[in-house]
Length: 220
Image 1 (tube, rainbow, N blue to C red):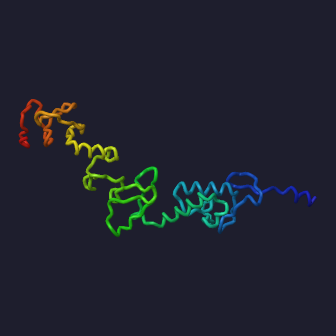
Image 2 (cartoon, helix red, strand yellow; image 1 turned 90 degrees about the horizontal axis):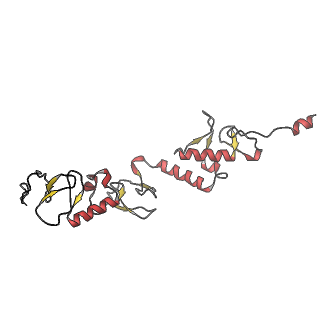
Image 3 (cartoon, rainbow, N blue to C red; image 1 turned 180 degrees about the vertical axis):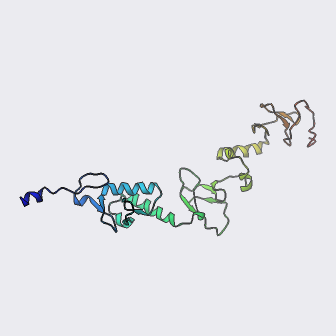
């Protein structure tokens, strides 16, 4: 009878997935008596890293158990282990010194230690230029003050290229709808497609009924 009782002993159950597991499939948490299957521990670590949590404790609330990268390295995929180490390194950097590459397909973490003022810089990861002061892709043709004065919808690379082209071609923007217009000939009086009239040279509003050869403001 004793032999039968011994042979019928059940395998331990992982309390996360609630499945029977053999002893060699379980992974013990440090500083506590809890253990879970390796698959669940890996998934648990990944979920915490996705929440930007680097100090990972035992899944049991208020338990003093903890998980450390070195302790879990034997069961973690290499990319998860490396991500955890990188997240720990990032957590040590002061928030005031930390920023990310402005290019969305890169987003590498960069550090501004404040020792010197840098404007044009190159991301060491994607090798593209960006402005370290404005934290955006490099705004060629504009200093930082001019760039900051641009509207939010005018700061993309395509918008900046258009602004540079407009300056080169001496196009004028309608002060009402911001649409670019070009004068081919004639006087400085300009009427935009939106119906707004202005002086092409200085941008001052021109009365719709006053189509004079000379602007009363800039005298051109």
